[in-house]
Length: 167
Figure 1 (cartoon, one colour):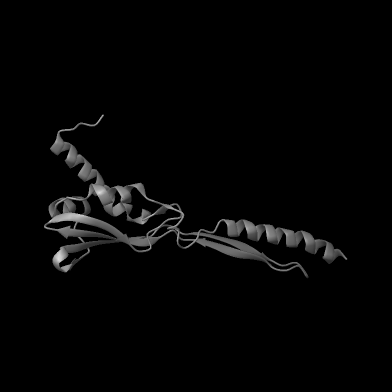
Figure 2: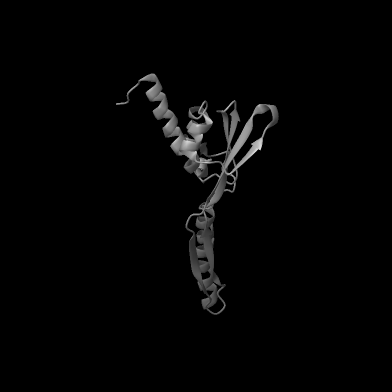
């Protein structure tokens, strides 16, 4: 008798706990629900026209280059993002005939990004991203570290060329 009265509350706790944990799981591919990161989106426009020397100044030397035939050269910047893990372990608890309760949760927000620049006649003609570079909230967010300095560099140099001042 006593075991049947204990099983119902334990079952309810297990069901509630599993629904809470499952609601916290982010899908592997967030590209359909997340917006593109603002910095990587800006880089697609702001970096167009930068010279090879400009790109080396703001992003450094490329990790790899490839000849794209008649359409110029492709420069690739590879970045691996290793961030801290979060490991939560729930101790296993078993009391008599009550089912075992326990488990673990591992969250690893790391990934990698390949930022690819198509260079035509010595200038950036296109910016693209590839890799496991999405976060739960933003697409291409792990690529920001490659292009953020170039976006600022491009904006600064456009102001200098046009004589505009910012307030």
